[in-house]
Amino acid sequence: MHLCVLSPAEPLKRALLPAGVVNTMARLAKMCTLRLAADKLYFILSDKVDNGGVSVWCELCQGNFFDEFQMEGVAAEHNEIYLELVPENLSRALKTAQNAKTVKIKLTNKHCPCLTVSVELVSASMLLFRIVTHDIPVGVIPRRLWRDFREPSVPDFDVSICFYGLLVGEVVIEANLSGEMNLKIETDLVSVTTHFKDLGNPPWGKISAQVKDLENMAEARIDIRKLLQLLAGQQVNPTKALCNIVSRRIVHFILLHEDVSLQYFIPALA
Image 1 (tube, helix red, strand yellow):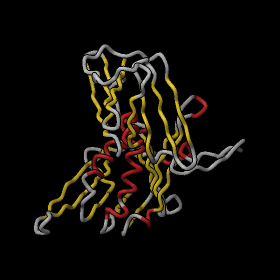
Image 2 (tube, rainbow, N blue to C red):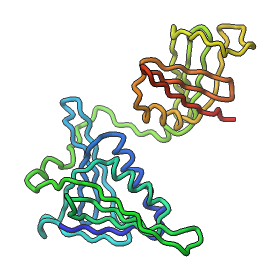
Image 3 (cartoon, rainbow, N blue to C red):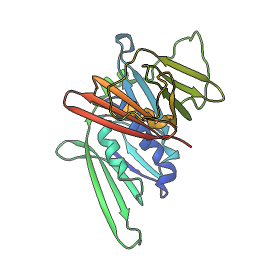
Image 4 (cartoon, helix red, strand yellow):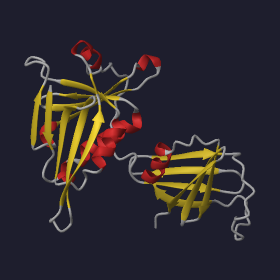
């Protein structure tokens, strides 16, 4: 089996989307399947939904992202390659390719089967070139197991609905010294408020002296994507989380777990 792909000459315009797909897969699973066909690439996560797992099927038309794409599968009538890999490893490799002149990806056999990513970088003066190579171990999935990675069947839905831009916009976080907190999201399509009560207030010595009314809400409007980065990216698994607000200036989160504390600062939007 042989694979050789060449990234476009303007990678920032087109190659960032595959990198974004790989980053998403890295957040969803430790292992995934990369299926390579003559015209498409597929990222597959095929856990058993009936057992509480998550299935993911993502396909990309290779012609939209690569100037050259050559592949030789196991046979002419089965011109495909199925690889098992750690998406986080591929994600790290693609991060070095964001400002590259070219990126070559090959299926190689070194100490073990590898997806080898060769990144050609050029200096700002365009005088110096260097090659950065990443060897990503992969497992080659035999053809007898390919049927386990078919596109999942779509059931007959009770309801199908379309929405846009739900995770793009702003969220307002407000809280008071009576243990109440509200999260508000407002867009042209939706207005949602989530109320929390009886949360308790830690005995800080840093509370502003201007706060005299315990019911008065301090609030800050922040970019929802920055909040999602904290929620999706944290690996501390905190036993306690604190939220501190300076009205219209900043939201400060503290995640606590045994001997570990993580602080996260999100500036308020104007």
